[in-house]
Length: 138
Image 1 (tube, rainbow, N blue to C red):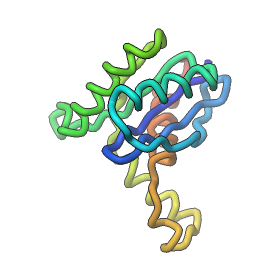
Image 2: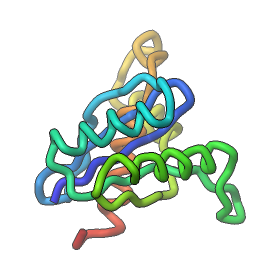
Image 3: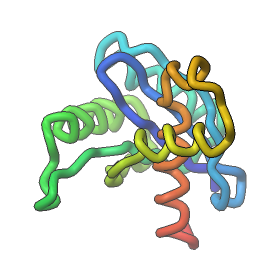
Image 4: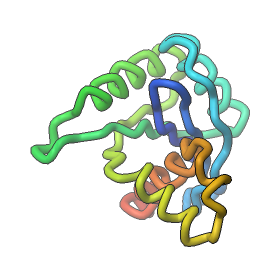
């Protein structure tokens, strides 16, 4: 089963999709943020196009495991997404995905100038791979 993951942000939403076996995460695209409802519709459309069976939304949590301000925004987005699709939508801790995406670009030897762009789709890929690694039978 393919799984679609979203790294929601205030400017952009990074999307990643798994391979058909649900084992390997791959960057998909970046959607510019418009509004919660329009963003949810765009994500639901991507899930349908890529035949996803599950949608994972990244949610940031604090040290006590409680949603941060951005985490609460992600939960509201997930709720809006549930109104746009019949697929199961789950929240997943996105701890350090952007920092990991930045570190991955450095390790890949991407120049400083090219690293200055967005990391949203790569962060979504890291989020999704974390989910896949924790749910090998999903």
